[in-house]
Structure formats: structure tokens, C-alpha cells
Image 1: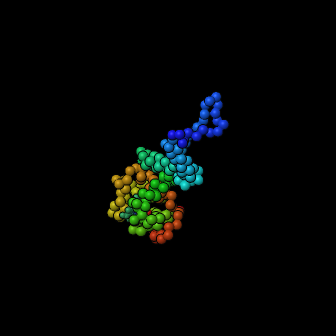
Image 2: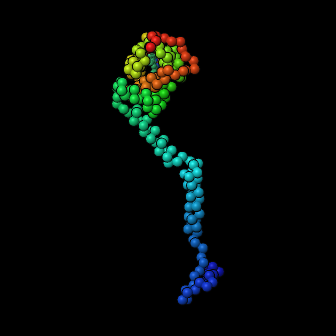
Image 3: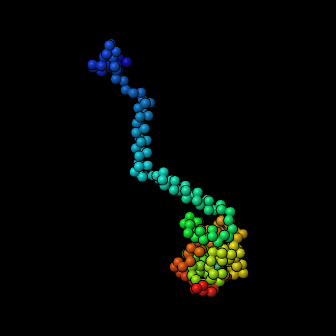
Length: 185
Ligand code: HEC
């Protein structure tokens, strides 16, 4: 005890001496840990080694929009379908559905395999308008091997995939199938 009690010179006022004890161990531990935390925090949020709050917000918003799109209780409404054709979030969802449900027969980029090319100006059913596409996708062409998706997809899923099919019209698939049906001028 005596050893530790080294008074700091000249620090004696009115008979009161000031000692120089180290801070308690728990306090120092907390102090150094807080420095480590600050370095980690700085690296994560300022230098950008982890996702910033902005990125996290963006991801959350994308997820929310996707959920909103999939929960819209809508039927074949031309205006809404057309609006979806220029809505990147809807198209992204539509593309995912197309890839998992349709690409096996229509090709990964809609160029056609067993099913017809969906990107050209030739249509067997209708004229390639959103409502025409909706109808054939919803009802299917059972005797030709096109399933009726109305029973298999929710209305919102149907809408997004129809919008996606509309959006790839005029694109250039890598391996396009020969035209089928009537050419739409
Ligand atoms: C099992 C194979 C198969 C799957 C899966 C399939 N289709 Fe088809 N689809 C066809 C066939 C075959 C036709 C041509 C029907 C005909 O000859 O009348 C067709 C026709 C179409 C047409 C009309 C094309 C035209 O020229 O009029 C559209 C649009 C279409 N499919 C969209 C889709 C979408 C969207 C999906 C996914 C949700 C899908 N298809 C999944 C086989 C398939």
C-alpha cells in the first residue's frame, strides 16, 4: 500500500495531497475496448468495409416494393399492366418468374424452344398486346402444350410475368426460333 502511495510533487494544497493511482482495471478494460469498438465502427461505416445504412435502406426498400407488387389484388387491367412494363421492380420479379416457370419452353431470353419465340412480331394468339398475352398465359393452350398459368400463379405473379413478356418484345434473343403465327405490322 505504501509503495503505491506516491504523492505527485508540488500537488499539496492546504495539507491535501494528490495521489496518482492508476484507474481501476475494469475501467481501463472498458476504455480500451471502446477504442477498439470505435475503430471497427469507423471501418464499417466510414471506410465502407461493410454495408452502409444507405445500402441497407435500399435493400429493405427493394424488398418492400417486391412484396407490394406481389400483394396487389389486381386482375388483367390494361393500364396497370402497361404501367408495370415500365416499372423495373415489377419487371425484375416478372423475369424471375419467367426464368423459373417459362424459360424451359420459351428459352431463357424468350427466343423460343418448344414454345414460340415471344420477342418477335409474330403471334399465334392475339397481337402481342398485354391483354392478349395475359389471356393466353392465364388460359393456356392445353392441346398445344402451353399450361394454363391462371391456376398456378397468383394474379400479381401473372401480371408481372405478362409485363415482362411485353417488355422483351423487340429484343434480340441469342437463338431465335423461326416465326410462328401472324405477323403484326
Ligand atoms: C411446357 C411448355 C411451356 C411452358 C412451361 C410455357 N409455355 Fe408458353 N407456350 C408453349 C407452347 C407450346 C405455346 C404455343 C401454343 C400454340 O401453338 O398455340 C406457348 C405459347 C405462349 C404464348 C403465346 C405465343 C403466341 O405466339 O401467341 C405466350 C405469350 C406464352 N406461351 C407465354 C408463356 C409464359 C409467360 C410462360 C410462363 C409463365 C409460359 N408460356 C410457359 C409452351 C409453354
